[in-house]
Amino acid sequence: MTNPEKFNNLLLNQIASEIVVLDDEFKILWLNDSAVSNGWIYSSDDSNIKNQFTSETNNELLELLQDCANSGNTITKRNFKLAKPNESHRIVDLTASWSDTDNILIIEILCVDNLNKIIDSSKIFSTQKIAANLARTLAHEVKNPLSGIKGSAQILLSKVNDDFSKKFLDIIINETERLNSIVTKILTPPKRPKLEAFNIHSALEKVFALSQTDEYKNLKINRDYDPSIPEIYGDEDLFIQAVLNIFKNAQQALLSTEEPTIIIKSRVAYGQPINGVMHSTLCEVSIIDNGPGIPQDIQEQVFFPMVSSKEDGSGLGLSISQDIIRIHGGAISFNSASKGTTFSILIPINLESKNEDMKSA
Image (tube, rainbow, N blue to C red):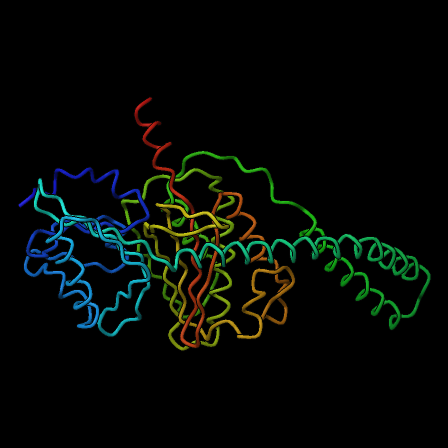
């Protein structure tokens, strides 16, 4: 039996493909991080691969592995269906290779769904970029008339003497100022980031501290951090603002929930696409609430400026957060249902540059 320690864990854990190493009895010897994150399970008590999947998948998989072991050839199966009991299946490209030297089978799995994810993320990015540019164009066209309306109202206010007219002119001036403030936010690009290494959990703790200043009755906030996440490069202040915008949205969504709960969660993610590019290792920050969910009719436009489910909302918070995360080379996505909403922030972890920094230190 081959000692699993002979494998270069650092190298194999950085690739997006799932790597599974088996002995000649089809027992799992080793999994890379991508395989673990995609549901493969290794247990010293029971590590036989046939206990991972449904009987249909097992029959096809064991036949393929047996052919590979008997022939010594590398076998690739396209669009192979991996189905686990009580879970949705995955369609993958699976390659099995036999090593005579070590008497082991090496399986490489590449999820075909990732290609669709890359295509979808590119489409979403392009659509949202077009919408954001359109909103900024419209905002620019609105700004000048607003100045004229406000100036005219101020002149009239200085001429009239009756309280009735003054009351409504004050309303016009105040509402014009509010609209002008919104337009200014849309037209103002995010400030130039100050990029440096920062601890993701230090930033999340500051978000937690800021959330304590708001009085939300009975709100329970849970923190679930993965301490193994290395420092990421970015602007900590901007990152805090992006997460805080999402957090405040979650708080407001819970106003009518009986036992309001928000979870701030951090994890390492593997093999995820951002703007059409697949990244091997990423930091994933999730804000999870148990609120009523985002209305179905605005879910596709939730990151567009001026789109909000709140009566008094400007619809800028998520748009600003998205701009900030994009500055960091990342992306925001969400999953919403009637029992809660999860917003997930993905930021690539550049382990290569980090290793170089460690060497030069």
